[in-house]
Amino acid sequence: MELMIREIQDSDDIEKLTELIRSAYSSHAASGLKYWATHQTVDDTKRRIAMGICLVALHQDEYVGTCLFRRPQPESPVELYRSPRVWTVAQFGVLPEHKGKGIGKAIHARGLALLKQMGVATIALDTAEPAKPLIEMYKSWGYQLVGHCDWRPFTNYPSVVMSMAVQ
Image (cartoon, rainbow, N blue to C red):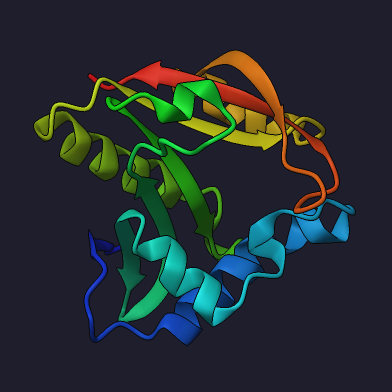
C-alpha cells in the first residue's frame, strides 16, 4: 500500500478528518466505550489539532489515519502530562477497513522521529482500561503502564496511563 504521512496543512478537510476519527473509534463506541473521539465535533478536532503536531496518513488522496502528538499540558490533572519533556498521543486512529496494515504504527513512528529531533524525552498516552487489545498493542510498541486516570464525565470508563522513552 502506498502511504503518504505528513503534517496537517491549512488546506486539509477537517470535516473529513473528524469523520475518520469517529469512524476509527466506532468499534469502541459499539462496545459501549465513550472516548472523546467517538463523538467529537469539527470544532473539537480543530481545537485539538492546535495543541500539537497532527499527522495525517493518506492513501490515494484519501485520509486513512491520523495522530495528534500533543505538547506538554501544564494544567493537566495527570502529573506526567505536566512535565515539560513529555508529549502525549491523542485522537489516534485508522479507518476500520485499513486497520492491521501497519498504518498506525507508521504514523506513530513518524511522530516519534519528529519528537526525537525536538528533544522530547517521553511520549505518553491514556486509554480505556477495558480496551485490553489496544493496551496490548501499545505494550508491543514499547509502552509501559505507569498509572491511572479518570476523565469521567467526559468518558464513561477509568483509564490507564502508559509511557515510553522517545528513542
